[in-house]
Image (cartoon, rainbow, N blue to C red; front, side, top):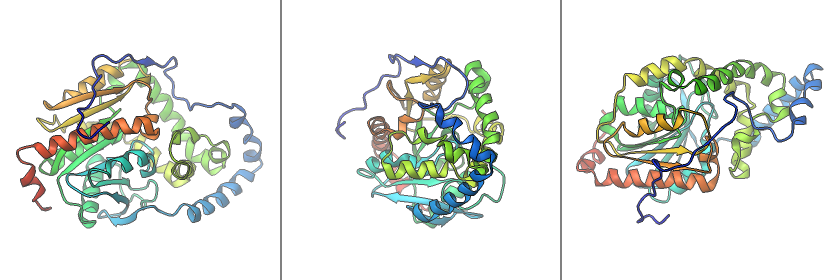
Length: 354
């Protein structure tokens, strides 16, 4: 899409493709991939392989960004591009900055863009405290300040990242210029849709076993999460797969899932967005019943909102496949332009951190 063209919308007319099973599962094209590693894991060889491969990954996949102080921990931050407002990319559950590669590179063409790893995830330092959206917002803001990234910010949240950016906007409304929610979590989704609740319950139960399976080497040997990097460039897909076999990363992912109810409660206290520019981007494929209605409800958080449905994208490929990620970048561009045109844009741009 040309930068001067309007954003093409399909929120009210999209044809959704609903998934047949409501339970969580990883798409596996070769069933042998799941069963072949069982014997070496039971024999103890998997543990040795996990340790050696983890050491290799730490040498081969150096942090692409820099470590910046977030107050009580260090966050891995990757920055590119120039201009204001600065666009902040917030990953979903278990995500790292590598997953934003296509969006990050495209947004860098028209604005400064920041992707980062939350504490305990990816290349960031360990999380010394409890999982909380408010704590995450304070850490992110401190890291942005430390890195010289000044407001205004356009906040982009994918999946669970949508919860985090809504709390950040509530905590620092005068520094927030706009928001993009990318197939974002609705804080009440598990309460209002039995299909979503089934999917989440089965996924969270499985996630409780994942750190143990990772220590045995099973997650790595089976390449269990390989498909979560589907469509990324080879380097970034390998980085994502390496992190999704790392015991520390997976333990922190589990900890975030265990804090789900508390984080959703924080979001419910945040309220609406008023007239803040908002774009809601929704996956149109592999959709669970109740999801379209909840996504339309997210679009009603602001009086200045648009809703885009990417019909051939699912929850993961919406950001990992280039053709879909470019649609997300279009939505970001739309919000950036709306933010630039806002009457108070100049005053926000000139403000400093308090």
